[in-house]
Amino acid sequence: MRIVAKEEGKVSDAVVRRLPRYYRYVRELMRNGVTRVSSAELSKRMGLTASQIRQDFNCFGGFGQQGYGYNVEELYEQLTRILGLDEQYNTIIIGAGNIGQAIANYTDFEKDGFILQALFDINPRLIGLAIRGIEIRDIDELGAFVQQHPIDIAIIATPRAKAQEVADMVVRYGIKAIWNFAPVDIVVPSDVVIENVHLSDSLYTLSYKIKELRSDPD
Amino acid sequence: MRIVAKEEGKVSDAVVRRLPRYYRYVRELMRNGVTRVSSAELSKRMGLTASQIRQDFNCFGGFGQQGYGYNVEELYEQLTRILGLDEQYNTIIIGAGNIGQAIANYTDFEKDGFILQALFDINPRLIGLAIRGIEIRDIDELGAFVQQHPIDIAIIATPRAKAQEVADMVVRYGIKAIWNFAPVDIVVPSDVVIENVHLSDSLYTLSYKIKELRSDPD
Image 1 (tube, each protein chain N blue to C red):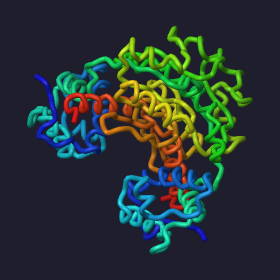
Image 2 (tube, rainbow over the protein chains, first blue to last red):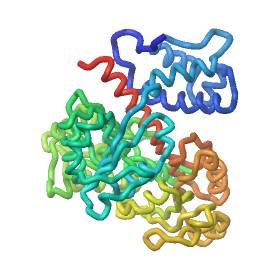
Image 3 (cartoon, rainbow over the protein chains, first blue to last red):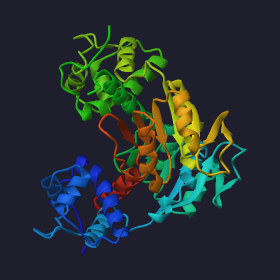
């Protein structure tokens, strides 16, 4: 059975944001050999009410049974499908500096089906090197490479000033998804999806929380 | 004038999440020599209504004038103070693998006042090395180091399985803020603040968006 979002309407952003956390938690249960989880336990762990969780799952047709809770394996498989993690995605990294290299070295993403095919940079000292056997290529080869290797996701890890230009380039080459690590809000056409990792925003949020904590220590 | 949150109540999480974006945008305007921004322009850029922005700013006493818009320099200074970015924070990184090293190499954070004082690891091959002149130390030295150097933020970049243990340790040593990069939800006491960068959650959200795009290409 294929799980698709109920109704015509889109699932709200808040629900979508919670899905990866559900997935991570349920995967952890699977790994620990747990076969069933009560909605009380799930809600405690997620910091949400059982009713909120039921509502979230109802967006996708609902799963779980009154009085029984959730079958962990079934929940895991459904969340996997909902998140699109039952497929493989070919990725490239553009910008092979610190962040680009760290992502390339992070093999957990491969286990999730995100397969790194190449890195690209403009720096002649990096071009020709390899990370985990995956070559760093000249950015000028990007177009030809993408024609030969269908790429699902471009990971942008360039400095701020280059990010929009690089995004325009990958969109022109037909790549439909961007994972952006550059500290800038990139603009893309409506048929391209983008997800940002703004590390500095996260750090600024933390300093806000520290300030709040210090001004009100209770 | 000191800007503090209006009323006794806490500012909502949604507002707090938007503050870093306001800050980044206004800083960009500053750098480009812009002195004034209309609320129309600001709202266009932020993808929010002018009324929403006014409401956000009202949480902090409000700034900007009817018909004039916002004075960029004033707005920048106030956002800087609100976010606690007018202070310096001493940081340490625990876990000097790919992610830890990438963060250590990312000098933009220093410009924002987050000063890296040391890295810690358990790997004897890493201990004694240095990144930008900052030493990677044995995790066993953590307690003594923190006693001599007051640390505001512990950045956790360990594997998943070690993250909670490390968090417990830094809390025991009196550190009140954690920036967590390990793909796990760490539990901390209520007088400790935490901010997570869950890279895999962001990637899973992207694969969800790709699936949605492919199933409904309009």
